[in-house]
Length: 330
Image (tube, rainbow, N blue to C red):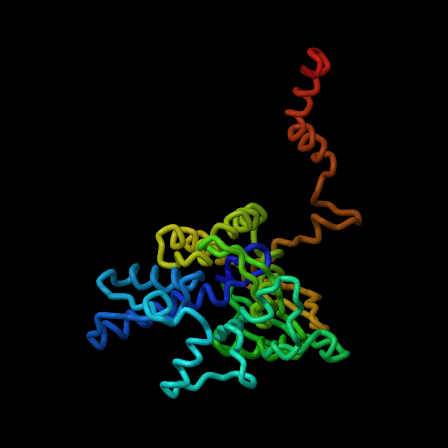
């Protein structure tokens, strides 16, 4: 997903969207291992997650019976859920006696919905945020990091090779202490309503910035532009729950192909919620050639060639202009 630079509606890094098919896949696997004929999820009947879970179940094993308590039982509010949990000694983390935010935490992000966030004009309290410092409280000095990429995937942080999980865990820590990764958005749910959510994705936010930086020197122009055109469709497909669809797999094949030469290292400075790229290098796949793009004298580029290039690209304007001159604007 990060090979695609996937973001939904310009901001959301799909932290919950990508988790649901993974959970659904594992549930279906456990059902097969144990001989179970049913699976269940705790998603409401108003949100996207019910769609994501159930598309996953049905895409893997359509014979499974799906139990959705929010839709089928008398548990149609958060207060009823809290009462049910208390009655059955199910421990739920909360502050005081009030119902907690609707939260989803995984390795990629933590999300918050409900309570004060149901007013899109109300600022969430600072105590809501759990993973990140506010930019105002972040350190007064920059932190510099280097991320090494291999075929579009981050493989080393500050010279130390890490597993994907350890990479994200480390970047979450680094980004969190530097106030990186908070967003407050109103998004369009697949089921038809708008929803406000707050998200903390510190590691993912750093990874997105770094990945685009290494692609900027290692990826061909038209391949990069095609990826950018494909990305909104890819992100929407994941957001809506169609991870196991043939269209997602087709797009994934194109995205993965584009990453074959995306290798190198990116240097970043982090400061109070900001991520600044300060360098990028790709020893074997660098398409940035200073001999061609220098503003100084060179021996490899004939600037007169640009004249014909411009005229050819302007030919349709020239023809249209001649028609207007002869026939007028009508």
